[in-house]
Amino acid sequence: MMRILLKLSGEALAGDKKTGFDEATVRKVALQVKQLVDDGTEVGIVIGGGNFWRGRTSENIDRVKADQIGMLATVMNCIYVSEIFRSVGMMTNILTPFECGSFTKLFSKDRANKYFAKGMVVFFAGGTGHPCFSTDTPAVLRSIEVDADCLLLAKSIDGVYDSDPAKNPDAKRYDTLSIDEVIAKNLQVVDMTASILARDNKVPMRVFALQEENSIIKACSGDFNGTTVTV
Ligand code: UDP
Image (cartoon, rainbow, N blue to C red):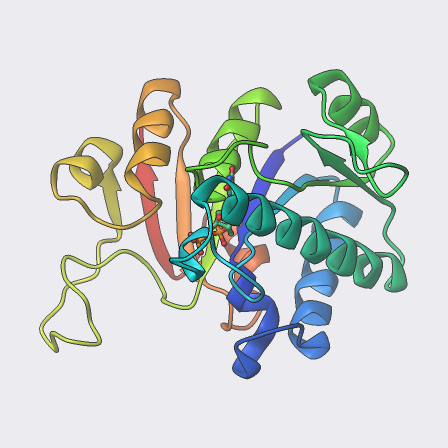
């Protein structure tokens, strides 16, 4: 049985609107994940919060508090996406590292495994529960904790490039590269904190464009348009 962790950015949920939710975009994600689950893959999800808030959004409030708002934004995103998933026939549960009353359940490895065994998609919301991280870190962290085979990074760009293709027309895309190269060249696959965690704990990653047709399903199969980061 294959178990993957899928990381979606907050912006991805907003489609062209940049903020809030774009239901058509999320529904496309839902239908792909449903196919994976129906075929027996276990799927965990981590979602960013950038469609609502980032800790660095405000310079005038305390960073720790600003990051708490960011973590709550990821909870809102997971509730929304979880409901869209349910509307297409999947079973879901949302786990957070802090109590959100009855909205979510407290994360533990055992609880996550129990839900996976029931065929549920498990959302890991609320980040790490601590400030000074982006959701890249909990994406890698939860991958480690639930022994995911691979971390799938659905982005607005179709892989990892040696320079920014928006600025450099000669930018070259990597088919495969190692996490050591990612770190040495400071390539933005995930942020540096998460990169080190991925290296030290051997979490392989696949980077691809969310907008491409069936890209999540293809990335899961390993035969996809994008970049593989090896460990
Ligand atoms: N955040 C945090 N701790 C975590 C994960 C997220 O404090 O473990 C906060 C942080 O403020 C971040 C926001 O949640 O800016 C949204 O997360 P996302 O990964 O979208 O952040 P981005 O990389 O876009 O700043």
